[in-house]
Amino acid sequence: GGGKDARNVLRTAEVKIMCEILVKAAATCHRTAVANIQNSLSSIQMQILRPLMNARAPLQTLDLSGNRLEVSGANLLSKAVWTGGLSTLHTLDMANNLLQDQGIEALFRPPPTHTTTISKVWANLQRLDLSNNQLSAHGSGVRDIALLLVDKRRLEKLSLSYNLLLDAGVLSFAHVLVHGTSSVASIGEAGG
Image (cartoon, rainbow, N blue to C red; front, side, top):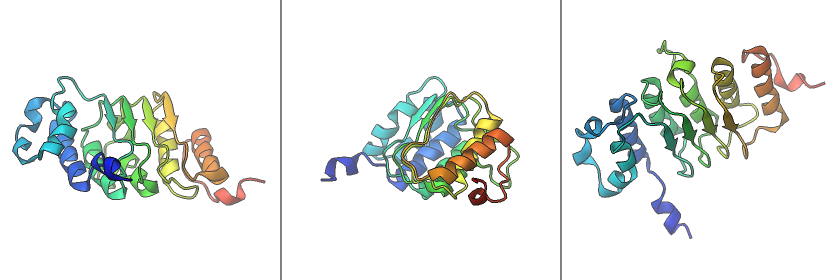
């Protein structure tokens, strides 16, 4: 049954509160950064967020794997990303969610109104796990990840396993790595 798993899954409202904490903390996540919203958290939310709230140093690891986060969850998390709230992360584990290409785009492509670069918001990222997130061969998500690698060469480990990349997705990824751009006229015709 799904009883035990359902209790360990973050709901959108919980992800929203976590993102608000990360945005307010602006990459430090000290106790004082969450004092203002602490009274509005349920005991379950407090339990989930306690490691963040007790952190005395900048947040270095964020593990949201297996929480069935969808595009809407990635959109909420992107607010923390693009305000610099996650710039101290060394490890981001988003494996086993339902982010799809649109969720990856929210996290790794700057919004049109932002002048911040991808290398600045992910300045310290060394390990990234996006396995089993339904990334597709023809979506923009895999190209956005490749652009992160081109722009930021510190990434030591990247996992894209158990997605739907197929040959075309890997070709798109490789094209960006080799040429440093995501402008591919026709991925489908590039093989022969």
